[in-house]
Length: 152
Image (cartoon, rainbow, N blue to C red; front, top):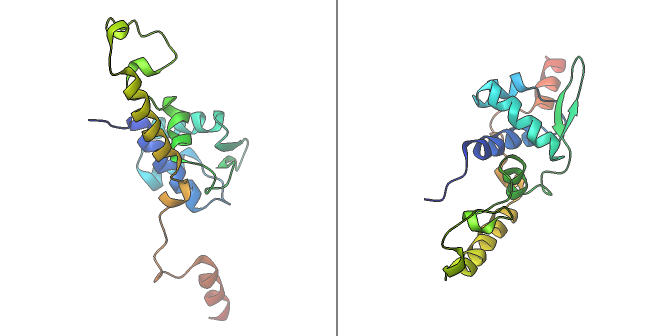
């Protein structure tokens, strides 16, 4: 089974939540409350996403994290790579020495590279914007609520 790590899965959830309200600052505590991802995990992931320049960190009172780029320009591959490193289906596809005993006689290594590239391209072709939850149409938008309050 090919599976994303929990950190990568949570990172996509957190980035989707932030991208739903890109003009706001988001704290680890509010993201924890919104997503139910454990607070220490949220903090760890936010640090990795900021280090990868997917989020901007704003320090001080009233600080938090905001989007560094446009949700249409950030891919799911970007998010996964920020927390897990390069998309790599097998150990022998990485740049690190894996000391695989079968590598000198492996007849499938070149085929795995083709498969790995296909998986990467699939993830790279899905923008974050496609993962952002859409607000329900029957709930009044923030501006509509404020206008109703002024009129009433």
